[in-house]
Length: 366
Image (cartoon, rainbow, N blue to C red):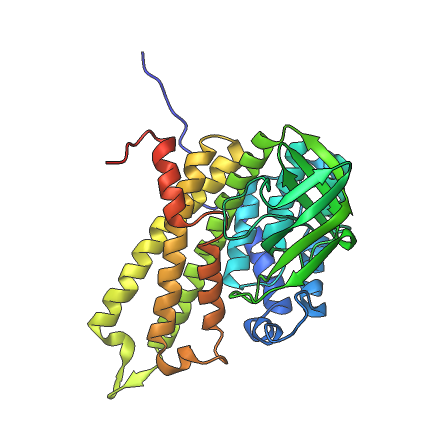
């Protein structure tokens, strides 16, 4: 008796190709690299230009609710389509709260059955974020905050997306609380990645509403979704920086030769291309697992393990092979390097995910 196993296609569908083109065109017009670079010097984390780009994603393309069921105001698509958007956001290092609101906060709200909140997030009426330290795996904040008699107190450091958010989702114990932004003090802190800024969030007897109880499973699912989709952003970063490097090496001359003709540099680019090929495979698989709900924890940790390192390698080589201009503040390549470094810390480092993966597939440390 034979059995057959359906193997998911990791290729991009025709619809995903159209989606990619639409998002890329919008970002090229609303968030060109020179504009993003200029905005990193501004004190406001969510400038008028960035808000305009966000409204384009919400109103013109409708991609904020791609994976949300139609009955909740979404597009009724899947996380595969969201992954395409994340790739393009990585390629543009766009400073919009898509990961924190449209992916993490929306996924958690859907899992918790918070239908009214989901509709607000999808329509753009609200921008959300999960209050959790950005450089750690997504978890409940038992050590940082206390919740008593409907009041929330405590401080959570290095939160991504809080500066842009209008609503805050706070996991405490086995509950998730909903807090309006005006109930918290959000203090910007120095961010390595100025395109996704972080802040310290303080609650002082803040009024909080319980969204749901027994939320451990929903929080775990959201953590895997966030890692799986972040891998696609990292893939976009790696692809964009490789393209920038190839273009530069094909134009720059040294000692009468195009420097891209030197074999040593070709070998370095080949190494980057190989890592990107691996990253693309695991990122696409993670997106497909997110869409189908199968094998997601393993796929998310594999993607986080590989894509974080691939994005860093591609961005570091881009800086190095651009020579002196690559080390200047005026050249946008440092935006990619900083985003790649910050992404490699978000929701668990590659090393943390490799350790987690060992437990998931029953590998024993020796």
